[in-house]
Image 1 (cartoon, rainbow, N blue to C red):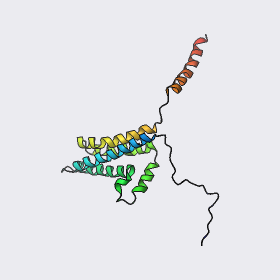
Image 2: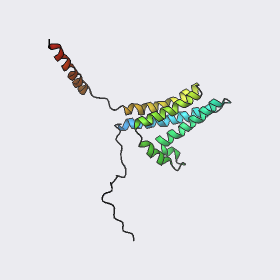
Image 3: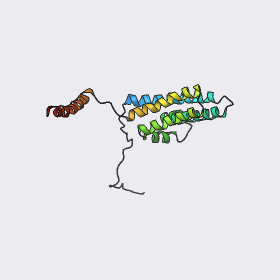
Image 4: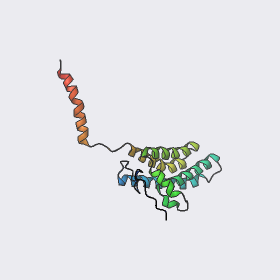
Length: 167
């Protein structure tokens, strides 16, 4: 038997560390749903885009199907049960900040449009781009309430009024 005592100076990490990024539960699910629907639209439009003889359309279609795969891996790893590393990638994607996801998703969605500007690439990548926009909006933070805004405006007006009263 090997009796190994835990090191008392080592930091203890909780099993499931929840990252508080300021997103509400419903907004987080909205972003995930947009990512999954964006993956579906990318996959369908990418497959449709590959049915051509134009090499740029084929390249854009393959990129769109790759986008769909990445979106499924990051947002819904249960859709990719045949991939051994799906849960690992999903956990790493969950640790990213919202602005990083926004940059990544929007960049992935714009690239096929630059390759081949067609209605198929525009509409196929629109929802994936919208998922990136939703993550980008969440990185801006919560909107302040009206009372706090009114107090800030009142605080700004007071020094202006004092300057106006002095001759």
